[in-house]
Amino acid sequence: MIVIPFPSCYNAYLRQTRGQGGSIPVLAGFCVHLYAGGEDLIRVSGISKSFRVAKRRAGFGRAVKALVSREHETIQALKDISFDIRDGEMVGYIGPNGAGKSTTIKIMCGVLTPDSGVCDINGRTPWKERVGHAREIGVVFGQRSQLWWDVPVDDSFELIRDIYRVDKAQYMKTRDELVALLGLEDILMTPARSLSLGQRMRCELAASLLHRPRILFLDEPTIGLDAVSKLAVRQFIRRINREEGTTVILTTHDMQDIEALARRIILIGRGRILLDGGLDEIRRHGGDAKTITFEYRGEVPSLCDGMDMLESREGRLAVKLLGDRCGTAQAIAHISSQVELLDLSVASPGAEELVAALYREYSI
Image (cartoon, rainbow, N blue to C red; front, side, top):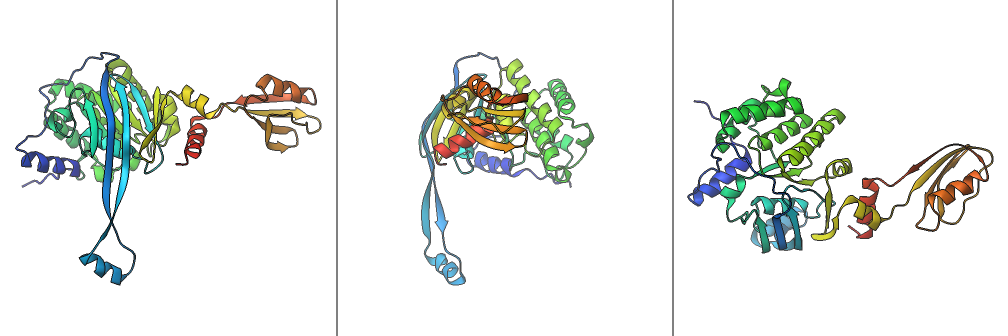
């Protein structure tokens, strides 16, 4: 007898569906969806979620006491959050650790039930219609696996195909495309437990896309990947969004992912939505304080009002322009009037600096 262990996420799902008299979610053939390009596909309104957590202090005596009487603390993970996401949109959902990102994603996937509020995804309430909802979503959680731990990756792919009942020809076409793009040829016959983190993440991404979902939830999709693999993953995500209209919700701490993929950014902190807009809007909100680096010959030049020195050594000066008090052209003219310029570079703050500034502004 051969025993094939199911991943924890499928075990949990089977327990629930057995209790409700349900069945494993399947797709009749290959999931094909049209990119309508504009209407709201996801509507989240007034969602709140809290968790009751047991507390006890260290020590044997307190541990014994906790067996009889426990103290509890209520953690408010989400506080009345609301947003809409259009069909075919690519959204970066960012925030520090503990901000509520994963809780939001789990509610939208139907894994968690909120305390209050409305979540409508393509006309369904995720936690009430999990079977139908599961047919249209793909999920990659960096800390969870949908691969069978002890069997080769290719067998996991086949099992996932059977669960979703994807047409064999369409499955082979999609599988071959994913394998080539993500560089999985050499690891298809390797058990998931023997994969490195980067290899596993590439396989997780492929597994989540085998049934061509309409909505793709990605939690740290490029974690552990080398530079070449990151570029390939980003290119593929852009491709499925552009060509198939797949709606993508991306949570990550890698701001290069956000810059490369997200057209819109939602910032969450302490369970609340703090900012919702494009990177340009966040740049305007956080300020576009440019940094100018001068290579020069001569004595150390003086600075004018609105210039803050970042670095000064022989023949090199780096300054930051503060607000509107000193423009780029004015700063260059001021320095060039005192020294002979050999080279200069002007840089705007990157996404990481902008987001870090927003974290500081909102004290999160």
